[in-house]
Length: 292
Image (cartoon, rainbow, N blue to C red; front, side, top):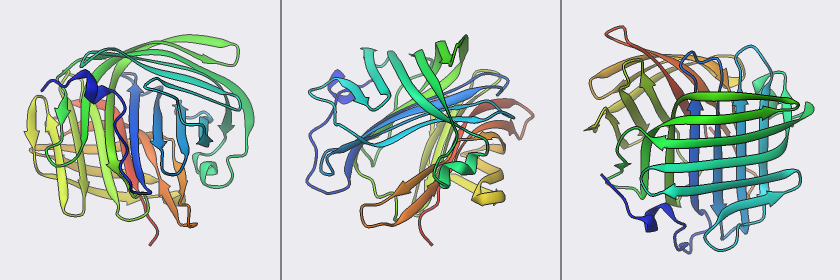
């Protein structure tokens, strides 16, 4: 499926308090030795934007940028500024090419669950100069205002005084509408297998959708084992006929606090996948854990 430039752009906000619009960009190298993600969420009726940028290197500190009080960007540009934060998300070509720029001060968390406990750690500089180029068609949800696309990602990552090049598979998605982070659980996953087959699935109470290659699937299921601090230690996913064993390689969770004080945990993980036929792959999986 293709989409128009108006779909890539910002949309007219609804009247609901929790109406929001978000852009996600995930990346992971083929060995799952490094990965990360960026999310910009606009909440015009709350008067704020949420900005997340995380860098995961298994066995090393989690590098985290999280600001839930960013000033909303003006006009159509997806450029935000905050204290120690600048970022721009740019659609270079509809359906095909996005760039993500980031210059920020981040915090290095010795344990991923420190993200739930005040995010105390050493201050470090983090920068992204990354490009997402389509490696498959856009997948548009049939019942939600949302679409996903598998990509190849390349560019540079800066961490303090070090600069290193990155190349590997990734995913991007864009959604708009009411999203209540404190109501219902869900599990979302996206990745690419070693033979280049992309997959994506999401399951929530009463809803599931996704794709394998270029084929849409309507059945997605997840069985998850939780470990320390509620962080998933393993999972088994079924995306249509594709069965996957999921081994988190590194966690990058987020604590989500509602205006009324409710708290949801949102573990996201850089994952290694093993398909039922032995093929392996990498990508990201998330589990929303609302109150109760």
